[in-house]
Length: 318
Image (tube, rainbow, N blue to C red; front, side, top):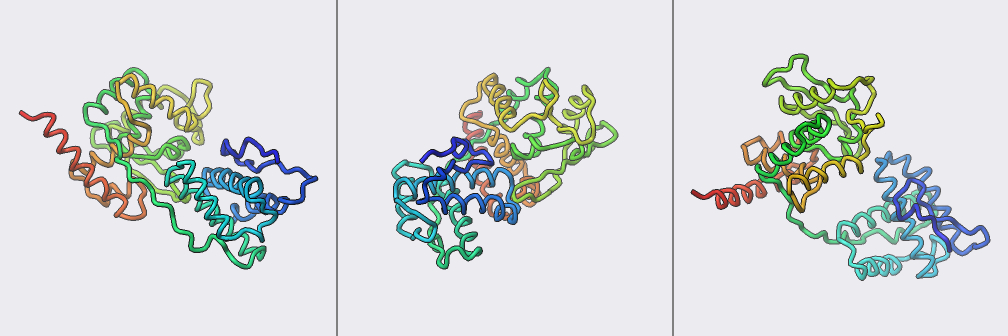
């Protein structure tokens, strides 16, 4: 059966194309369409979550129809789910990827049960795949100073980099910023504090302080252009807002220029948090800045800060 390539590209309409003459799996795709149109909207999922769930579920249903010969949602049982995740394991998909797919599948079956389409939920009780523990990459002081130097002379990119380093914001949070979200102090003086309001995971809004370095960099950039209050903070050469992908390319370009390897945009978030903890910033303050729900999530940076200190003391031994 032909399926739309959008399912693999993660687009909002990533539901495979159905052959109207094939009745075997029509109910599956109809349920997926209704799930996207009604249930996801009701749950108020973030746009990235909607796209990810649609893509993951389209691949899951494709597997059921093409490999398992499942004709309708009522036929799906736990064995089908076990076989599917065994196949993902054979494909050597990462634990985080499998955990995301499981979340999408559980959401889908909750919809089916809540809608009265199925009586028993085969996804109930499925264990969460174990995720690999990866050592977070943190830039040393020499590295982030080299990154700053690489941006020297480019007001927009310098402001972008400074915002990441001084706040630990997520890529998606920075990409969606508008001028209305920024609150810069009237006076441009040392110790003047601003703020930025962002929308994080679960569409939760939070306000993060902007120190004088971040304010100064943003002033230098914003003073060079004219824009309305609802305009994106970071603009491309054509005047449109920078997308997440464009910001990734910009950061990677400067990391390459600075000779930094094995790092990404998310590395800047780890760098902010680790160095804040290393310098004695209260863990609760770091938690609020990062938008973590649990302090336990933030506490990982305590050990990272300790490791970074050990490495630097060893590298700079007298």
